[in-house]
Image (tube, rainbow, N blue to C red):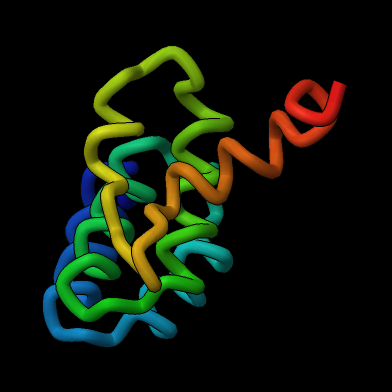
Length: 100
């Protein structure tokens, strides 16, 4: 039976090939819950191929799984129009705090 490492390799291979939609579809169909390594592999591929939409999803999942891991904030420095994915997520999460 495949283990999480095997699924991670498939996501990494699909991502390196630029098949980001297939990688995301694969993750969603996995019979086990994807871990932070899976989402980080997808995020790295998104940075290479500049897919900001999937990058934001992958980054959100990383933050949900490991909210206190500073590497998740550093690894997601994907820029779109001068704003990092991290900053956009941070702004959304803290919108109420900032407006008070």
